[in-house]
Image (cartoon, rainbow, N blue to C red; front, side, top):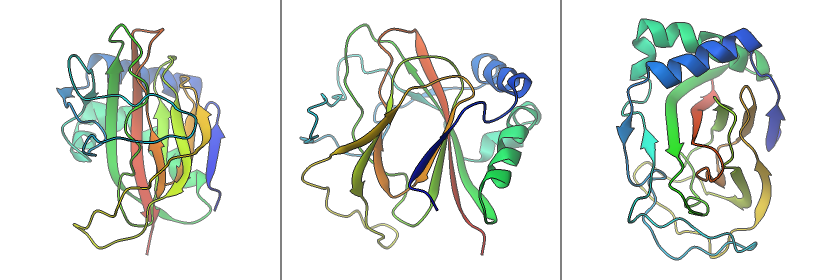
Amino acid sequence: MFEYQQYEDFVPIGDQKVIHDFMHEKMPWKYVENISGVSPKQINIYEELPVAKYQNGFTGFIHSDALGWVTNEDAVSAVSPLIKKIHETFPFPVEIIRIRGGLFTNCGFDWGVHVPHVDAFFPHYTVLYYVNDSDGDTFLYNEKAPVVDVGVVPEYPDMFNVAASFAPKMGRALIFNGLTYHSSSPPQLTSHRIAININVVPKS
């Protein structure tokens, strides 16, 4: 399976609008300060991207549930085409283990990138679907997280080297090896950035 792949118009335009409208008008958001789940520390990134610090106005919003929100009838209707397309795209059967919506707002100055992280320390794939046109790139790094037992957090890499970056665009999707360290970044030119993060594993 590929390390990463970008797709344009991952779902049809009409479905993109339904997802867009649901995430803007009906999604219940909850503020979370530490969006990556990684404790702040000195992070070294080869290309010297500034790393966002969790203080004084950092704006990160995330939905409070994982899969819970797709039990809502409106949510099911909105994301069903996206889930269907994910199953069609992978060359093997997959199981969705988490769906999460993320919203970052423009805080008026350059926060840099969020702390590099992975969503889980076991083999999986991550699907990022961009809900709206915005800035605030996603960065993938060459570094990979090891597979460890549940509850174990491995030592952080000494250095992160940027492998690729991807700009948010409505309907665009990025699929990558979930053990790849990655960062989001908040928008500086547009008012907000919304993405849906979906984690999948091969179905056993």
